[in-house]
Length: 110
Image (cartoon, rainbow, N blue to C red):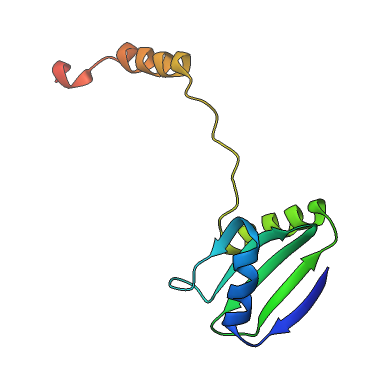
């Protein structure tokens, strides 16, 4: 990965207009930075906009490195995909209902 500091958002915007945007991570309205991941010809780029640090342009060597950086950025920003919870088990639900029905109601005996 190569990284250079970009002083102007206009420069990043000019690059963004030429790129095929793959994904956006972050939000300047709710956070302090946003990363735009895009591709121009054979270049895999991350445009980093920030309101609290230096703006930067990162260029990744290949698609694998680019995808890894995208996932890492999502994890840092809290957007990563989580493992789905196990599917709803209807049999388990029925067993719980049977257990509830098997319990005698002791309130009537008093």
